[in-house]
Image (cartoon, rainbow, N blue to C red):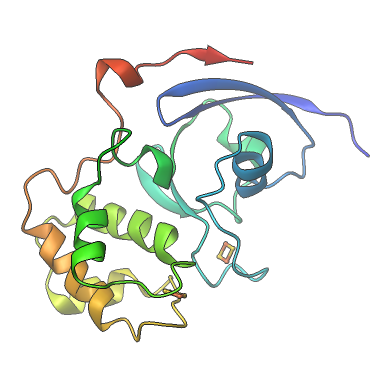
Length: 174
Ligand code: FES
Ligand code: FES
């Protein structure tokens, strides 16, 4: 076992200081060390996108990033997408449009969609389909997922992904 190294992660508005093995993937740091189990692991080939989070505002597959590579970065997971007790417009749209069945792909799908809308707030159906190509769903056939993203795009503030309210300002947890 290699020597743990210190990593500082700023996750959903909270700063965390961790000791991690250099080989530890970001997805495992989030799930196993911070208990943020909304970020899923659906494959070991970087294909499924269930592990998608935002790293410094960009959607990334957190199984392709080492925790040490995220040192000092701003990470948003599905738990931080909306203030506690509220739904993000994308979550609302997935609910209303039945954009999920088993739900396993849903956190990653929503984080990928949030990244897509941040880059392109008014996408066409084709652009949504293209933008979500890296996220797999074995249940829905994608139609309602695409519909949900298009519906969410009509809602003001659907692109806001980073916690900004005073209650979510940084605090340090060891
Ligand atoms: Fe499948 Fe990351 S767990 S792409
Ligand atoms: Fe089951 Fe997408 S809803 S994998």
